[in-house]
Image (cartoon, rainbow, N blue to C red; front, side, top):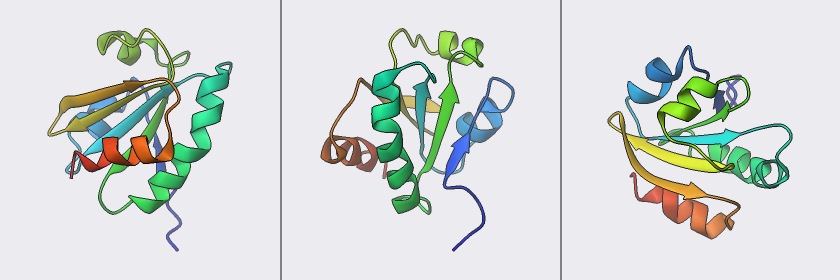
Length: 110
């Protein structure tokens, strides 16, 4: 097992390098510590990060600590999951979703 965490924690400072310039599709979970639905979907995002680690970069961005990136992408509700490919937003999901729906969402980038 690799020592690298499957979930990449991104910030305003490294968002472009980690997500926009990523050589593979990237899923970003925009969340906050006080958000109950974010905490509900968090373990699912982490499970899928392990399952997709070779195909998709799965990351989390705390909107309280990184308001610029959240604002840049128009995040108004959390959790918001955005799928990026080749530096562009492919699709967006808002709210808690099932594992099946989240896998469908990720698979459209492959």
